[in-house]
Length: 232
Image (cartoon, rainbow, N blue to C red; front, top):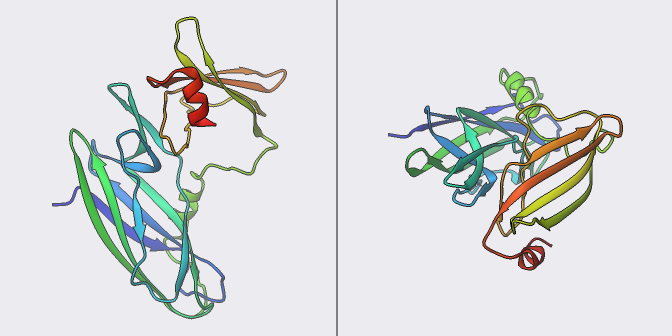
């Protein structure tokens, strides 16, 4: 018995002449279970979207909603609980031709133990007018949860540095500019191939200068110089 329900939806009822077609995959988890973000943390696995067997398919770009942080035994993992929708931009090989998607979605879900699950989600979008689909509203809502990476007018990072305190503990310090203070519960997620464990930051904000400072613990046995090489 699977502990996750995975469903696919679409933005339009026909491919029209669009260069990309937007679909969505919604993952609904049982209470207490979690799945992972594209950068899962120290002990998780990211979802795998496999499109093998699809027709008139060139590529797919996954839009990842902002995750939550899950901490257990000083191990930080990043992912989702309850429900998450992944908007996906699909590029067909030939514009205006039917698009047949054969998605195999591999998930690792965890509670007190971790279980791999595989979901197969076929979807056919016929040729014809790109009429709005009933699921368009849900996809539009999901898009609101995608972090904006192009809005430097309201937020920009000025500098990033590793520092070692008198207690020999190492922190990651970020100076940024923000038009507004961050809301309660805000977080910072560091993506790096090393998967170095960065804890939840403490935020401080100066409204007069719009300067934002973030300080996060680095949970590693490596010394400062080694970490600087690792994270450079």
